[in-house]
Amino acid sequence: MGKDQLLNVPIRYSTKISVSLSSIHKLNPEFSLCDVDVLYVDENRNGTDISKDVVEDAIYSLYGVPIVGEWLEDESRFGDHGEKIEITRDKITCTITTKPIGFVTQEAINTAEWIEKPLPNGHELKTWLRLHKCILWTGRYKEAQSIIENGTSQSMEVKFLDGDYKENGYFKPSKMIFSALCAIGVEPCFEEANIRRAEYELDSFKLELQTMLDEYKKFNESGGTSNTATATVQNNSTNNNPQMEGENKMDLTKFTALLSDIKCEGNDCIRYELLSADENKIYVFDKEEGYKLYSVEYVMSNDDPVINWNTKTEGDITFAEKSEEVSHLTAIYNEINDTLSKKYAADYQVKLDEKIKEVSGEIETKYTKLQGDFETLQNSYSVVKEKLDKFEAIEAEKAKQSHIEAVKETLERFEKKIGKSPEFIYFKAKLENYEDVDLEKLDSDLTMLCGDVLMNSNTKKTFSYNPTSTNVNKYSTENELTNRYGHLFDGFVD
Image (cartoon, rainbow, N blue to C red; front, top):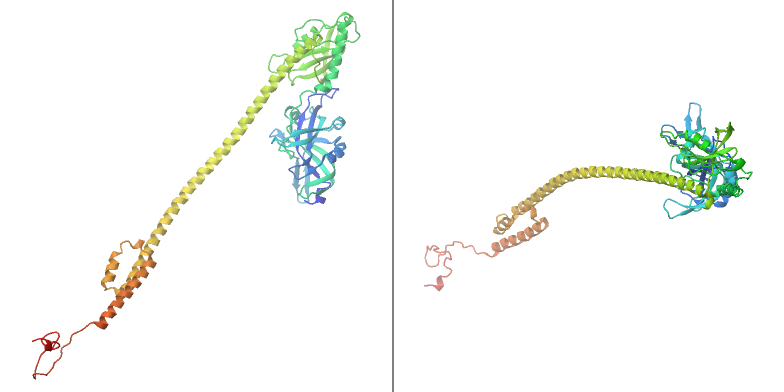
């Protein structure tokens, strides 16, 4: 892709969205807050190299951009960026199938921070841009609520306004803007951001709760004459001790009695744990929604409280140093902390077991497939080997017979020349296994033998003596040859 093709075109990157269950200000109950790890700087596996300076220059453009997503109803998860190409007889159109489920707040821009986190390999440390307190419309969209409950991958969408390619092929933008953050259900480009669901923003709420405790301490020291109507947290729902004295005395047992009638769904557990109360609100923990802290407005009618649950507002919680004056708060903290620790430990173990089971299943499936492929290959090899052995046996037999025929042909060729000689007959008789005979040596040996036989034959014809009969009339008129030598030796014998 060329430089001009990259500029002013939406590019999508990926990381994860995680959830913060906290808000130190009053929040629309239809909203929930979330944190987003947007991207890490420098080179990424998608072929871009985005510097920290470029990101910081573009952070302003994040304000108000939508958090979008395409929810796959059949699979109960998010899809990808949600682009669909439609082809008709007249035209080709590209339809965006994602919808907004939240947005980036100004507070998220103001509190944006850089954090250091390693990649999944554990060896490479990356610098991430993190946003706090973005808004999700959980009251309107169940897919937004699924992010609150489980978290999901996230892919940023940007437009490159200027930049150029580096020598290694990476595109390095010099100017860009953000256009959206997209919730996705597939592996993101910015791999495995390792974002977990945020718990409580302890530091942000610390001052608020400490102020409450300081007011309570002043109230006790003044003997209950303080104008600040602040009630302490109850250790449990059966604590019947009044929380104020004098004119400000407030009996919280009426609140606990009302709350005790509200049970968790599916069991008899009391859903709300009373923490404290003031002139207008009570503060409770909701055990059914992950131990979130809520404030709820109430009014007194004939000395009985009437709670308006429509004003239920989520809040933060933190804890001050342990002291004698707040020992009951510490007890509540310990109880909640133990419960949450057990809950998250159990959830972690369940997820760990599920992951181990999933990975084991994948390994078992791959092993079974490889075993099947190996057996198939082994069977195919056996069939091919058997056919090859048969073919080689046939070819070997053909070669053997061809060799024997060549030996016979050589013998017949020389037999025509010296076949009647004793030397040839003897030589031929010594040949036992024709298949083991070296043809070149056989031809050479027979050639030499043939030469010897023919030479010997010609010598005998030249120098041998053949007696003849002749008539000699020396001493008589008639004399016959009576022996093979005639009269050759007559002069030497009597």
